[in-house]
Length: 196
Image 1: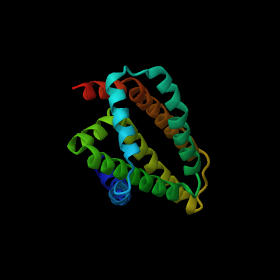
Image 2: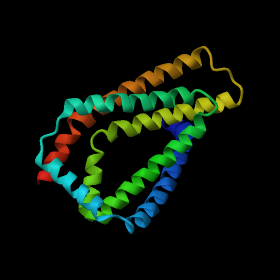
Image 3: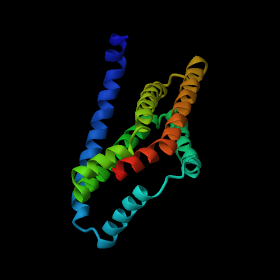
Image 4: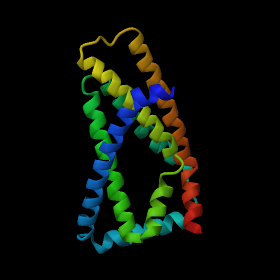
């Protein structure tokens, strides 16, 4: 198992980490540049939002139904396009985008609230991203493997198609658990943290 991970999966994960890191650096630079041109209204709005989260009880059910189509549809579109030659370019774009947004939001949180901003940013990702990240890495790996085979003109029929569909269904089910955590656990965690 360790040999398989080192030989087959580790090169993909290293590539994914490099792409994410590149997007993260760009996002951090963007946040530092954009922060110089911030407006006072934006800062007041953010502070008001933090105060509102700390003072109000979260309403999880509407939030769950808000997240459900957005998270599942995004993953389903990724899976459909991932079965074509566009799979690998899409994974590259997704990782760069995720890194960019993560770097931007973390940079702005740090600039506006210091260490507390970093803590709140990390808290906003927990615990749902403990589910989302492994699911996305697994799907990205499968897509890159399959997309490479499609590019090499291997046919996407039979056992490969069944394996891809089963893996896609597993990832969608995993994402659903992440949505439940994001809707029902994360707001309570943030509410408790901001109250402290």
